[in-house]
Image (cartoon, rainbow, N blue to C red):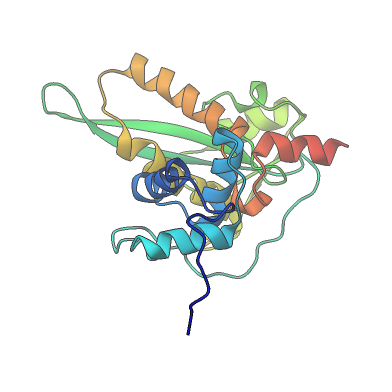
Length: 231
């Protein structure tokens, strides 16, 4: 019995270049199928489906992330604001580096993230970084922010409120963004001096806000989400 002939190539089959990019995004950045699909279309003009990416990863033994990859904590769905600037979460991240002398250097990253769009400012003076008026800043009662911060916010017309004690999930977006900073920025950074650190931090902030698609925004960047909300 004659077997049905098989085509030498499938017109919908991914090119080797696309396969290489999928594997690189997985191995280098530990992206999931959805984020890989968005990155392929956004930066390489390669349009494919999540199922195709998943099959490609499985075929090459990359169906599971390594055990060292961080896992999301299961939690209840957080309420999300729909008005840019209505609520901004603020917190501090501490980063440790080794300088050229081998000594440990400790630096503080002040972070503010808009609840509605996910737009972030990674500097102390957050009001000058957001393209909209801030209504409320929400933060924990940590020692990092004291009375001076409260009254400064009130003086410039921003409502300042505290989250409930022992409820870090209420400021979960800024906490989650700090984990992204650690995995995608600080972990890959070689510290030389504070000038270089600030330059690279500014570039990371710009990439996060304008070019990095987010799963929480269905593949849009924070500024793309801002444009859609302002319509």
